[in-house]
Image (cartoon, rainbow, N blue to C red; front, top):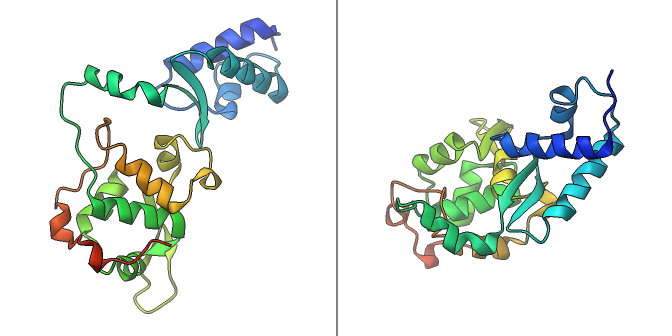
Length: 209
């Protein structure tokens, strides 16, 4: 096995994360670009910490999400960076926001339980869209008549919202507010059925709490 000094290790990790199109975990680093080197987990983590400090004052940050580490721009720069994309971003519907929030905060949860809280039916298109985006998945079935599917969020959901784990979620009201505030950013959810088809008037729904 080859040796690698701290500066070379830092450079290799930085370059790996930079060129990767997915977050890079410590295990992935060890099994790919560092497979030929003798390097400890402690040394890898030290290099990652140093890189995070290096990028802290810049417009690009090194952040840890559920799947590993990635570079991303500062949220405060989004209004200007969004001009790089000419197409109009799809919008969140209120129905989809509430469905996603309920799954995030009450998982595992069935479709029927979501409908009980919201007071209206959940469109199949919402479940399909969230599943296709790999933000939710079926993790089992509830042992009641009909054995309905139990839904939970995924690592991709955490990655999208720059979270390391579910414990990093803000409270439900803050999460909903943050979703409402991202209406104009790229790569957002879209409910093709439209919120009106969902019966989205406020007096038809209960609180998420």
